[in-house]
Length: 149
Image 1 (cartoon, one colour):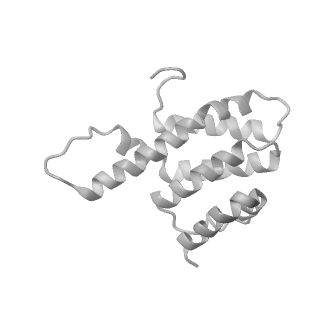
Image 2 (cartoon, one colour):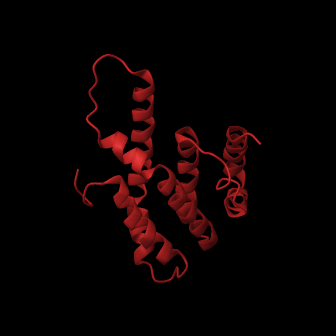
């Protein structure tokens, strides 16, 4: 099936029923498809909202999917975002990739506080190891130290 169409439908369904998003993440169709940066940009806000859920199953599904996206795109995002953004002439495809990587970087960075909070909470036994794993994986993005600008 068409990944973009599936993600578009998932985005619409997520608003009214986030459990559908969790079911899709758990079923694994995203792991068996080829995602691109546009797909990652579609998924990251959904995953961020699931990360903040009161339901542990939603949080765990989000952490697992975020880890998959980080494995798939982390080094591309970091390399592109941190590269000297200066070029001779105009390279529209590189400019587009830079903007997408910058947006992904910002979305991941915006989840850091939530992940650290999840990692500190002892009550979420299943979420804690996953949050710690993702927090350490976020280092792939070469984020500045917590609190630094």
